[in-house]
Length: 180
Ligand SMILES: CC(C)(COP(=O)(O)OP(=O)(O)OC[C@H]1O[C@@H](n2cnc3c(N)ncnc32)[C@H](O)[C@@H]1OP(=O)(O)O)[C@@H](O)C(=O)NCCC(=O)NCCS
Image (cartoon, rainbow, N blue to C red; front, side, top):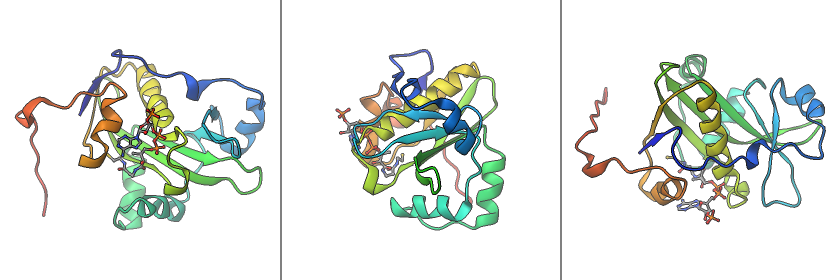
């Protein structure tokens, strides 16, 4: 699926400044951390690009949505080589919990590809996935990236479509190569 970054509305909800002082968040989640507005009345959620990711916690999150385990060393390298890594944390001043994640690869100028978009099943339906994608696109826009692509699982095509993503027509412009 493809998305021109200037295209359509990018929700600003995930960037809202609100009652919780952002300085408090930055102490726990690193520079640039921001609260993510959600439909949950019980929890607060915070986006961070700079809080260190615990690889085990990340893999547990990705396995919780049904994806298979990957070798840690390769995952670490993939993270190191990514253009953008966004963690979404359920706020707790002592034990923040990683509940969402997305990352992008790309050339840093023109094109980016989104990977590993996941919200922990317990936290799905609160609007977090939508806000996470808005945050990702907003961050890519700040890098002046023009075009973003992702490979949607069949079950989530309408999730992306409703946010302005376009299904690449007829599939004839996509090429895939798998090592095995
Ligand atoms: C897809 C995913 C990220 C959505 O996260 P979420 O936090 O539950 O989504 P949201 O609550 O932000 O939902 C936003 C909107 O999308 C809709 N939506 C959510 N999941 C959907 C799905 N699988 N298919 C279609 N629509 C969906 C919601 O109903 C909501 O609609 P609304 O704005 O009209 O209320 C999450 O379900 C997930 O992690 N799934 C497993 C991993 C996965 O498939 N990732 C994508 C890989 S390509």
